[in-house]
Image 1 (cartoon, rainbow, N blue to C red):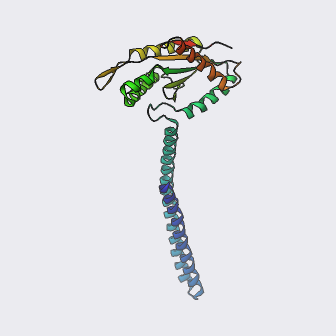
Image 2: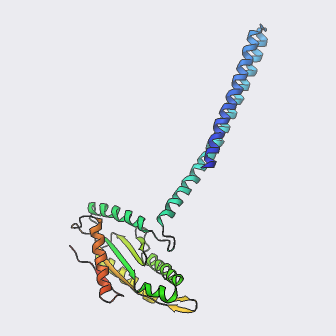
Image 3: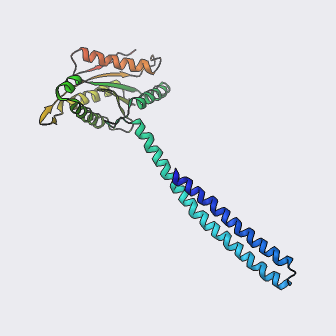
Length: 254
């Protein structure tokens, strides 16, 4: 922002300096005319003043073009910085997935668009099984390692640009799948289950293994709001955990 302000200042200062030069040239010509000089002298001085003003105008055009290009580059850089800052505000610092705030906003947008579209949309909720036990047994750094590695599993399992993967909070994750019906979402959920089972993490010479539980709900016309849809996915996840964990439960259609 400071660079942008400095560039704008250059433009204004340059205009003031050139305006002063033009006024000085015109005042000089006025003094020549008022001095009762000969017509030839006035003509000669007028030509010189006109040439001088022409040079100032040409210089102004060149300078303005350079400053305009500089200003354009500064604006592009500022836009990129703001975009990056906005993106960082939407990300979870540990996993680099979208955070809870970004998920809540995306859920509302998806719900509103889903009600207007005939395309299916599924919501997946995932919980790492016995995560507290991992923290208690190996320490929080080990828990952080598990979260990061599982986040990688999620992004690899759901690689489409339209797949919205977020850390919901603690050891819970959410995925919004556009244009995906329950059967396809179920297969992807099973793939995620297997990816977690296959992970072998080395932490200070100790092997860490874990499983996850998954609940899925497809958006229904009967969902009154986004919270209703989220509740159905969360209820499916709860049933998966109550049924012994390390499994996937599909939410009931309503």
